[in-house]
Image (cartoon, rainbow, N blue to C red):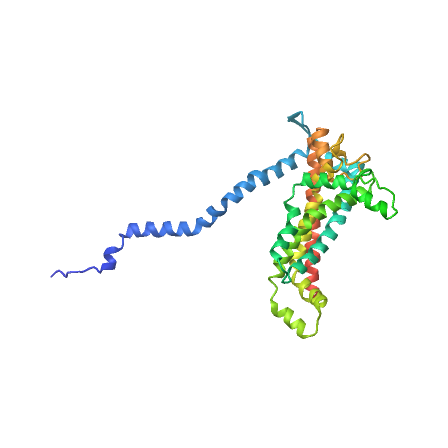
Length: 324
């Protein structure tokens, strides 16, 4: 006697076993591979415009290649790198880059920290002040540098006009060594201080207000709260800005290039290369002298210096945290 079977409405709505397995398999594939599909555009662009140029530059640095005929190359191994060790102009550019990096980065970050501390208060029109400190960053590098070049002019510059009333003789900023580097560092500091100040401000607003209240109850004044609450809370952000500012200082190009006023061979960085940076020297070797292999070696030397500094800074930051 046959027994009649009935299907529940849910069983009738489900697809057959074969269709059910295909759908579940497709759902698993979607769950597994969709995240990779979403992030793949970044990796494709990075491989095309970041990784490939990096590898090509490394390969070129091991060859003798001229800009006039880049398809023809001669293997020279590490000769381009060993030549840098005895290249006076390379070490001069390295010293100038380091000096201007210190002259611009240290005051810039200190002033940015102070500005952020002021902007963190409940000021009247604080939105206006926050936009105002960011406006130099939005200014064109060319426009800002040309204006500052006029301000630091020897004969009719505003800076020398002010120094004249203080009894100081006119300074030839463009043809001096330290004077030119200080002037260029002022331009960099003016452009980037507000940008770093807003980064510090955003980090300050993430510090719990209870910490400031506890410090105030313990009798700490504003300065003590800043030292013992704000600065420790900003330590990761300060490390980040130091690394980013150092990378930017090592790639300094536009400001010193335009500071000479567009004279003959501006990539030289002054009549005696007194403010020529590594980026300017790279440009000179690659596009003025047309030695692509030597220019690629300079680019990789800059890259390795930046990596070394980031590693040292990371180790120091970890040691500081572990000491506490």
